[in-house]
Length: 386
Ligand SMILES: Cc1cc2nc3c(=O)[nH]c(=O)nc-3n(C[C@H](O)[C@H](O)[C@H](O)COP(=O)(O)OP(=O)(O)OC[C@H]3O[C@@H](n4cnc5c(N)ncnc54)[C@H](O)[C@@H]3O)c2cc1C
Image 1 (cartoon, protein in one colour):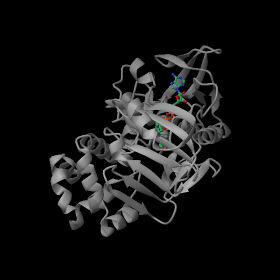
Image 2 (cartoon, protein in one colour):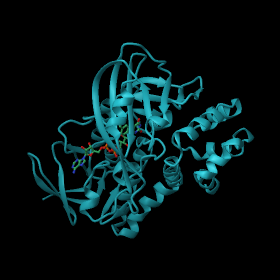
Image 3 (cartoon, rainbow, N blue to C red):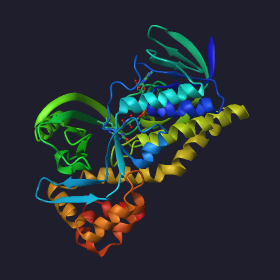
Image 4 (cartoon, rainbow, N blue to C red):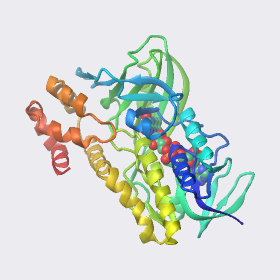
């Protein structure tokens, strides 16, 4: 039977980052991917902070646009625009990004096997289906099988508490938009938010997420943009981390572990970092000859020390956000239009680590008038605790 030090399930960005680090550390590494093509289908808006994009360690080739701010629209009269005047995020072609990351892993020595769905895990072996069905033994298994992955369930692990459904269309506009600004519409998707992400001034990615009525909400939202839909996709975003992301020789990474940011649904930044932590933990455990759960726990300790607090804060805020009414959203957006608040957002805003900005905003007298809303909805308490 074939045997690899590290078997990675899933060739998304997180699996590729884990495989690249694993192979670079000298581990024999195999990536198993159920699809016949890496980076397809794309289920992502492709908006990455400049920090998240830097984490991917790729060339500029996947970049389609650079954005420098956002416009937040309540649909009830108030709007808020902040423009940093310099690039704060990029819009990428996810297919190209995924393929370049997989290429880096292959260059480092990782093997890829496509059309190889992992059907189940039996002890220290994975059983794959597809045209090359086989059994493969592993030292450590890295489960990067995404938000709908089955490895966790098959091994008896509890998954993320909630999963949101998302629908998104690429629309070639008859008109045009400002390509420098992302647009956010909180009231168009009351359980999350809706977005319009410019790929150029004529091409936008329009979508939303939620738990209920997602298709109807999407149809209504999509009709705001005149133009032709050239790509339509639905996907899943996990909300909340799995209670335990390691054990039974397995490390769960990225969306498979529920590491997407609950406030935005973005999962590349945290996911890619978790993939590298997993590979480094695998290498250390194999080197020490200790694959016990206690040894593998080092992986979870690392991602928690890095961004665990941000994810917990984001999860609580996202749950509280659902209690905020459309009218309250309108009043919050109006209050955030204060010049000092906009300056704080531009100076301290960090898509990947929002807690520093929140702490600063809480101290700003300009926002005290909205304190009753924040207290009523439990948000003040959450931010106060962080
Ligand atoms: C509508 C939408 C918009 C989004 N927009 C953004 C955004 O703008 N920015 C951002 O950062 N994030 C965004 N996300 C989230 C982002 O797409 C994910 O966080 C990211 O793809 C997670 O990467 P991953 O490698 O963990 O999982 P995936 O990218 O889901 O990769 C998992 C891989 O595992 C494979 N796989 C699954 N099961 C098996 C199996 N049993 N055997 C073999 N292979 C298997 C799958 O085929 C897939 O290739 C969005 C998500 C959605 C749904």
